[in-house]
Length: 235
Image (tube, rainbow, N blue to C red):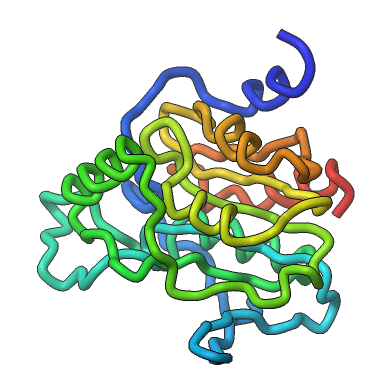
């Protein structure tokens, strides 16, 4: 296999899983995010925005979806018997390290109807959404997408692809002509068909062929891996 998909598959781990929870079995607590630019929601004509320009640049957007920021109340979940949701979430941690290196703006994709904090229930809903090709309603929108040249897009592998909320975001925003850089937290399923599926809805975008896929248990120690990847692709 040569070309684009060879590069993509070389970053994946062998095997296939079901939903790849990007927040389970974390061996340690991720580093503090205190130096990360936080999103600042404001409202304009009923549409919420979560963008704050960084001091370094206003041309890079780092959008991401993570279970930890899309889960309902976790207080009733038994962390011993259930896969637990742990803040900030694997994809959010990856996005934070990318933000530290690039100075881009962070944007957390959140759905109006939170997913269950119970892993099995979340798994079932994700499967139903994929089967129905659903488009979950999002809480916030990016009003000034035209102001960005590059969009980093992070997501977990859910059922061999990206969560359906990812496609809600991609279809609600015009990314024509923009460079799109993908990064993914996954389990044994690797990147699966996520890159192909995202590329299909972005025919007019310039998708970076060097896609970063990191096994979920390796996230707490992957900052150097992320920095090396960013250097490889010119950031």
